[in-house]
Length: 336
Image 1 (tube, rainbow, N blue to C red):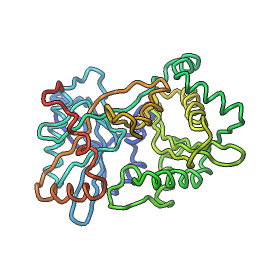
Image 2 (cartoon, helix red, strand yellow):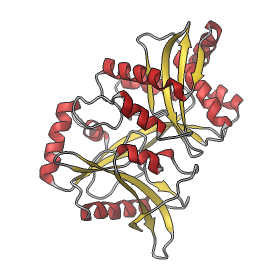
Image 3 (cartoon, rainbow, N blue to C red):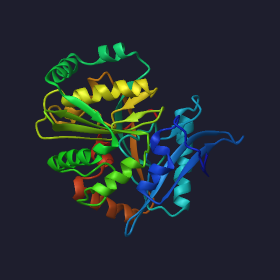
Image 4 (cartoon, rainbow, N blue to C red):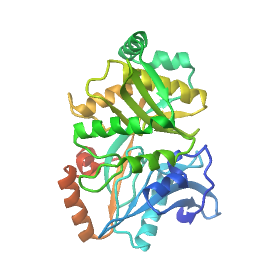
C-alpha cells in the first residue's frame, strides 16, 4: 500500500474536512494522499495541510485516514501511514504535528510518538424515538425543562457573530485557544472565524439557544452525509440548565432528517481524571447515547532540532501538546 499524491472530487459521502474549500482556510498549501495497491486501486485518502511558521514546515491532518474500502485492515493502514511519512520526509517537512481533535486514527506509523485518544460517536441510523430513548434520563429531564421554560433554538449563518462571541468568551474562561491554532496566546479573530465557517458553504449549521431573548450557548457543526461534527461550542457563564442539551438534541434530530450517518462530538480524552472538567465534558457527550470510539493521535519528528523547539513552545503554551499530555496512557504493548 503506497501513499501517492491524488486529486479528489469531494462529494457529501466524504467527511466535510476533506473538501478543498475548508483546507484552504487552514493553509494555501494542502493536498490529498491516496493509498494505492499494486493494481492501482485506491483504498483510502488522507487530506493534509502544510503549515508554515517562521522556522517550521509542519504537516497537519484535518481528519483521519478516510477508508474507501471497508475491507482495508488496520495493518494495511499502518503500511499506508508509513509510506505517507516517507512522502512528507521527501518534501522537506520538519514535523507532523498532532491532528485536530476529530482526527482519531486506528493506528499510527512506525517511529511516531502516539497517545490514546477517542471521540464520542452517535449512530444516526436509529429512529428518533430510539435516539430519544438512548439519552440519559438526566438529559431527557433537563431538555423537557428547557422546553417548558421557553428556550428557543435558532439556526442560521446570520448567527455567526453571536456564536463567535460565545465561543471566544468560553475559551477565555478556560484559558485555552481555539481548535487547531498553534501560535502562543493566539485567539482566532472574528474575520478568521467567519472565513472558516463560511468555507463549509451549505454544509454547516450554526445554532444558538436563547432564553428570554438572551443567548445562552451555541454550536457550530459542519456536516456531510458522512458525519456531522460538534466543532465549536460556547456558552455564557451559568447558562439556563438544559439549554445546551436542548440545542444538541435539536441538532441531532435535524441531522438525522438530512440523512447524516453519524454525529461526532469532536474528541475526548481517554479515562479523564475524576471530577475534572474533562470528565464533565465527556459525560455530557456520552449521555446523548454516543459510543466512545478509541484510537490514537500522533506526531512524527523529522528533524530533532526543530522538534525540540516545537516541544519547548508547546510546553510554554499549554504544558505540551495533546500527545505529550496523554501519551502516558499508552500501554507498553498495544495491538495495532
